[in-house]
Length: 324
Length: 123
View 1 (cartoon, chains in turn purple, red):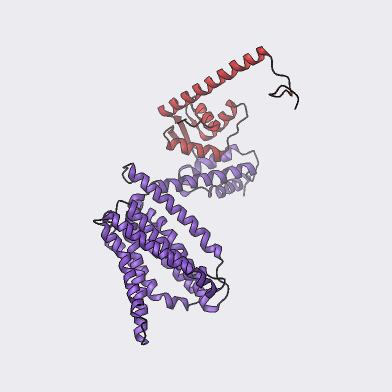
View 2: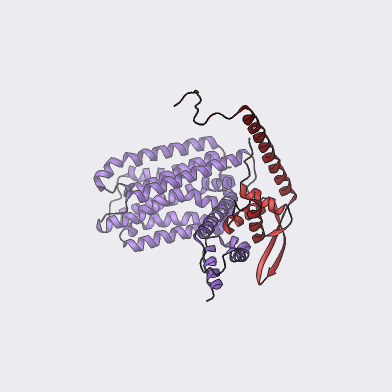
């Protein structure tokens, strides 16, 4: 290979740091400029030139990512959340309730009546706010907030007990609790600051309802079965299910709203996914599960991103700008 | 709200194009000439700036050519770019004028002795 051929190949490899769109527009031109500017006979890019290309590629990627986010319909995404979050949660808690009721009846003991009543009331309390919001938005927000507050007490109230029960793995319990709590809080924010459930229903398509209801019901019904499976299988199932839901939402909801919806749902989805994977390991062989830091820092980061998105949505709504 | 000052590489790229349309490598060599070798633009920095300036409507693509089998794209200043460069040149020129005037006064009064402190005594 000639010196210039080797140099060109190395420059092209460095250009892979740039996003595909940038390479399509400027790639060939940049190769020409890089070769023209290279000292005669050089076979390798200089260190400073290579660093400059990598830095330029990262900047271009950041800019294209920012442009991608700038086109997001945040108010629309939040409006969808005001419906989607209660639907997903209600699907999960209903399936969970029916599963335990069914297995309890089969084994001749369904537990005390008030336990069953509490599970049923929880489902009602989840679906009531978006329905109420169609007419009485403020009442719906107060109700959703009360439910989130009650759930917060339940999650953190169970912390001492779960620490003593699970030893060094309290996060196993709280992954599920934190996931549901974040979802409830997202639902409150969506009811309070989005254009409302009516707008969310307009954006959703018949197929997206299936995407929303399916995962919650599937998890609720198969949760106990999942725990008994090997870690690798649970990991594949959980990641596959998340990818399917994300793909389903992107394919059935208009792009600008779907992008925002995925980012908003990431915060509640992440701790639940870590919990689902980790609990299988705990119950399977009692070996050390995932470290606590795998659950908490990413969850906090995603929650901050969601808050930023909600603030952005509020600003867009208050400026009366139409969705991009 | 104050406008952010233009970065020097951007100013030099616009200055290079104020002389007429140029391709990427031409801009790089012209920028080095204008700055008397002080600023040496590299391809990554140049194309990041070109992409941004094209997106902002400051530059436009004049024409494309194939030379020795390679794409060569010529860039030009748009009317918005010309206006921006003129405003930046005026701003820099006004700052430079004030700096020169104050330096003249300082030299007329006599520069403070080296090592002098605000209190006038030794530290």
